[in-house]
Amino acid sequence: MTSSSTPSRKVLSKIASNRLQKEVMEWQTNPPAGFKYKINDNLQRWIIEVAGAPGTLYSGETYQLQVDFPEHYPMEAPQVIFLHPAPLHPHIYSNGHICLDILYDSWSPAMTVSSVCISILSMLSSSPAKQRPADNDRYVRNCRNGRSPKETRWWFHDDKV
Image (cartoon, rainbow, N blue to C red; front, side, top):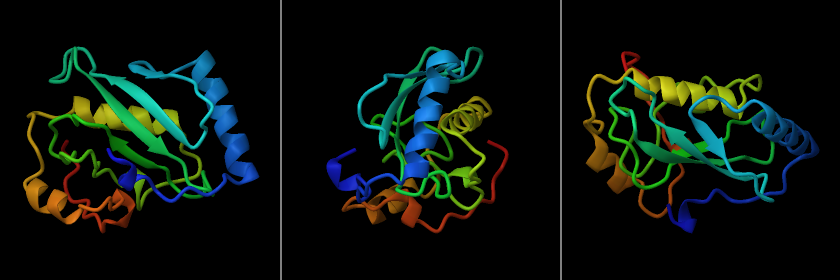
């Protein structure tokens, strides 16, 4: 992704900063299986390596998630996208945007980066076919100029994959 897809950066609130420091500590002692996060000085942006689960279509493949945390995390959901190349999946667009309700309408402050990652891996693992969403080309064309996936009005109608 280019820097134009970066959400506007505001300083993290004290609550967000404390929460993220706690989550970093948890990742250091007990990271979710299939994920690696390289600790850096930027709490607002995490790059997480995702390994496809064994026995799935994505077994042996590795992808990267970019997680950008808003000023009021965890009250507001982070922006989560796949960096190029994004996996072929019916709910993942070629620009890395992910159609997953917990990243938008169903977000809860009780969720963590770990729980989001596990949900994304579960979504990948349950896919019966590697393919792009039917509206991929139209959606990506409409997202030019760095539009955030959080600006999209998602329609969550398919919970099979």
